[in-house]
Amino acid sequence: MLEVETLEELRKTIEAHRLVLILVYDSQSPHGRYLASLLDDFAFKVEPVIRVVKVDAALVRDVEKELGSPPRLLLYLEGKRIWEQLGFFYNYSSDIYAIRRGILYALRRYNITPQSLGISLR
Image 1: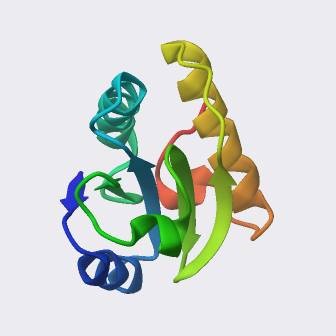
Image 2 (image 1 turned 180 degrees about the vertical axis):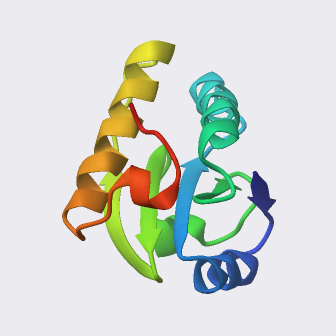
Image 3 (image 1 turned 180 degrees about the horizontal axis):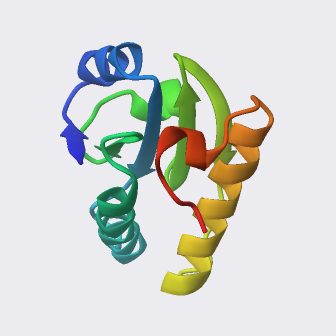
């Protein structure tokens, strides 16, 4: 899990990794802190295959102009944004399920299976 502090650091991370999952959140909000914690748990299951990155909109200037307002989850494949989730349930099991399914279907559009990556999204 990486917490970036600048947009330049984020851009370099996207360029350096095949798959990058980014959470844009606000640490000033209880919902943002919940999502950051949720993503910590999720990262444990998918890293290092999917590089998981957190961007705190309260600290990183201009992140909203670049990626959109928080909370937001984005998946990049080879530098291209292929999936985005804007809404959350704020229920742990429902949110984990929605994230897994969203990533699974996004990868399928590019004929990539989790098994071929060596991870499970079930």
